[in-house]
Length: 320
Image (cartoon, rainbow, N blue to C red; front, top):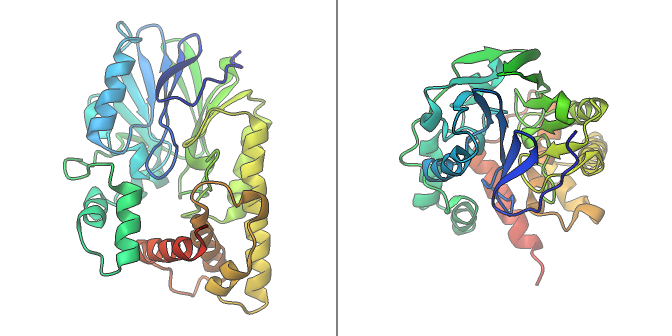
């Protein structure tokens, strides 16, 4: 049973016999984690990285622990590019995702992100913010490589003798979030259902679904959680993510019913214990998601609109 909490250092870390995580500090925009389950003859990779270069470096490091167990299966936990843009390098494997994730993969294509970091976006604050968030990554050589197998709900896998459970717990962070549970090691790779040390961002929601997903993960009795971003943790840190989301949901809902706009609601909310989490500007996107669910008839903001609002919120709220 895995109880090891490796340091939050870049690279491959062993969690248990044949079980590894690949960590990328500082866990901010695009710096995601991945996982590896090594069976007796084949391995399962959990997520690829944000670009080809980073994914190639990860696979090179992993090759040292799988000389007789090549990667035969890949699971994409969700559709965000920092968890699937490296798929082209494992295209010979079976790539699995939820059906909802497969549908979402083209929503924010590599070309859009390439444009965000190479173009003048017509707003100096947004242009600078986009380059700060994503300028370290290269998107012009990413070939979007979709899953070859999809599922809904639950899927059990046997990785050459290692039993794996896939649980679809979205819509939450995205429309089709999946976790990879390794029961024998009491470990779960939860994708972006956990941002540890950073502020979660809710693209899909509703937020209550994400809170329910966290409750489900905790109910599995796991000791070790590999988040999509941030250091390896336990259920206590995961529960704190749920506490933040529940707070945002309640505070934003109350202001919606009081007739406040989403922008006014954000300006009125005090982050308190979560103010020091990284990417605190994501409160803007999260409140917008709450409002969208409360008023489905309202026009949903586009991706660039959300990033512009986050960029300006951060500029206005930066500490001296």
